[in-house]
Length: 135
Image 1 (tube, rainbow, N blue to C red):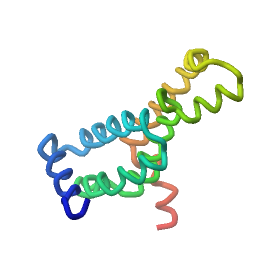
Image 2 (cartoon, rainbow, N blue to C red):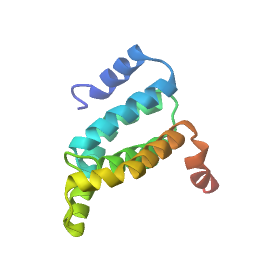
Image 3 (tube, rainbow, N blue to C red):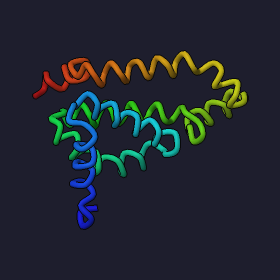
Image 4 (cartoon, one colour):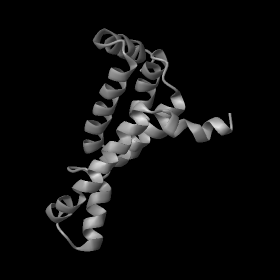
């Protein structure tokens, strides 16, 4: 990735789309939510962090805010989303129910997770006050 200058190309591509950090955060959230539906948490973090961290830094977004919360929250939501949804499949196996039954009951919690993701994304003080105590 360093040889191909993926990070530089990614920053330039995002800057060509928008220079507003709010729009960039929305695009990153959408990308991570889509990737989360197809990838497990660990590979997604390992692949996306080196590409997205330079973008986040270029737009002046706190790396702690991005890494600990946005990346982890998006990956956590992805763990409950089909088609991969590892946690969803384990829960269905333990509860002896179908994916359809689980999805019917999980929507309110999925919606609440997305609301929390949006709140943490656009109100960084919600997520940075505790690390700020130790800084």
